[in-house]
Length: 413
Image (tube, rainbow, N blue to C red; front, side, top):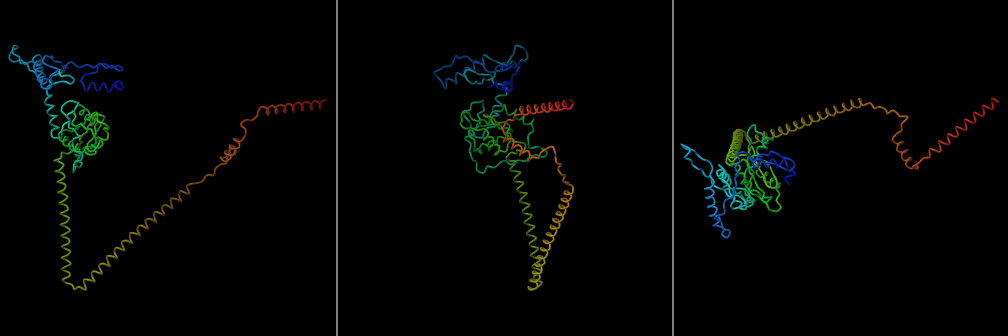
């Protein structure tokens, strides 16, 4: 399969091994490991291992082997004072994959990186114990709750002057950063990922990128459906997706839960204050109206009040009718003006359009004549004797010439 796309295998080899491809031709690649390369894995002696005893005996034998290897292998020397005094610094061993005697030295800073990666996943959920990759063990997303009561999409706020979408350069840099990252989650189901989405939001508070591995051996897994639902639930940006991994970026407008809740509370308080102000204004206005009405009613008798109310109602009705009539008249005038303009335009167009009479082509034929002649020609026989008619025509001309010659001779004689 690697031969089908050698350029991709070239890139993958350089990325995953850290080496350099010095020559490539066809399906052959020569990969150089580098001058500062240290072969990590090696085999230890099988002195204290027994095939019959497993369990505790294997752990004790491995400890003894590590001690033997640490005695036999040492890395680095520190000179203090003179060349005679040296301190041998030894590094711990890490068990390899595939064999119990295959070990390697621990790289500087590797333990710290493993601890930090493990701390990122602390408290997100149960781990996937059947993990086939490197440490740390990812969170088993299938054991997380399928439906979280009260779950909603995270509140997002884009900073001023920042584009919401990623540029091509930003996308490539984020993809390159996501390649060597360890997997944070292991997923095997296609739908109902609210628990996983909540865990991803917690992870995004510490890490910008979330990497999800699709479980191997699980039937009917579809990474496309998984990515679509997770993108919709979290609101993140999909960086890469294939049959094995899904990588999601939190986005430029992502806010942690504490910040988003504080902003929402502040906005809700502002809305409440505006509503209270409106209510207070309306209540004050109603109180003023009631006071005016009460003062006028105390001064005037009841009969006068009824007459004034009726007059005010009639005046309002008249004003509303007059306003409606004005609106309709203005609309009618506009419609009539537009109609007149359209009629003028049509008249001008009719004047400009001078219908040119078609010249009769005497030599040609019309479409109707062409159709009829074609129909007649198709009904005729598919051959025509031209040779006989030409022959008879030639013989007739010869006979006429001979007669003319005879007549001339008779006249002369």
